[in-house]
Image (cartoon, rainbow, N blue to C red; front, side, top):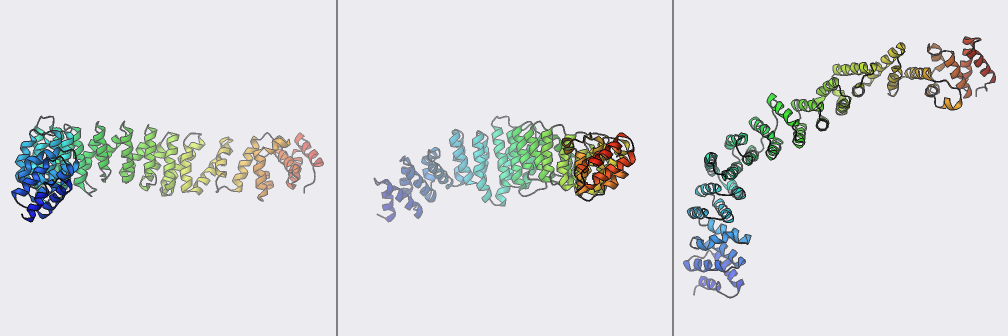
Length: 542
């Protein structure tokens, strides 16, 4: 008996381990002969998965053609290793097995159909690929999808000629299915389009765009076309025709299709065209907030003047949530500065004004001088008229040009004071809260506060008097308070007495000086007599 014969003999041994070992060795030796094939084939009926697996692997190496009747049933085995080994063994026969597979597909169960598709994918030749496509028409959705996925690896390994062949065959199949009224054609078309994507061939672009755009096509087919476009585009970022189709799909009533389009859009540059801008404006206003959110985020990442235009416009929209999303997307975008400034000038909504201000402030210095001037003038006008909306404008300009803001507030404060307008104190208060305020500005504010004071000389009342606090601070800074008070027409004997009384009580020399001034100017008037009496009783300054 030959050595090979001895090994074949071990296939009949009672020990399963020896049978497995014999199958492995025969496969490694690529032993030939009908007695080898027959002996291995008989072991496929053993019902022992591990043994079946190794026998199938051996047959794939030696030749499985004669064992095919026993191998095909194992495509539906419970164990995955056995199923995969059976597929490899059948594929090892080559394209001549394709007619057999076609015949079996006619009556195959969904599980068997899926397994046969896998075998055809492993074969990968033209006949096998044509058979796989034909089989898609009889498959359910999952089976057709699995068949397409099974082809992916074979496509990766294919050379240029084979890929072109796959493209031609797939497009012919799709054309045929498009004309079919078979309900199963939807799944078949979706799977075929998936294969087009795996080919990563720009020549498939026209076909994919056609199916993606076709509103009569089932959503699943259109969705697969969009996904396939991602593969076809590869690393390309500029594809205007694709963007147009994706924007159309993004507005689809089918939410899944729309989100697929949006995710694909996320990897592309958006052209600066009126049509694209119009589509984007429609999408950010879409009732589906999540859809709008995605587009807003994409616009923020995209950048550019056109994207900024859409986002700034959205900040003035009725929907506050969308406006907030747009504000987040615009943060730090310098190209949006002129548009934001214009929006701030035009908005009548004070709350939206604050929202725009928050986005604009970090880039306020990027505004042109003309725009800053316009914002400042409008803010000052609104402030003077007690209209809403000046705060946001003034804040933005202050960050860009604090000196100009201080000057404008000072001029407005003086103007209002001359008119006797109570708003003068508010304006000068704003000025004095900045680091551009002078002591003269602070005095003017204190003078206005003094005019509103009750001038109650009791200690408790004086302790809470804002005018006294401000004037005392100026005095401590070395400001010529006496000189300012003498020049101030708004400070009469009553005010002078009140201040003199306060400073005398604090043992400051200015108190006696002011009271003496009252005695001198008021004469025999009541306030003059009060000042005279206070001087007589007042303690000497420290």
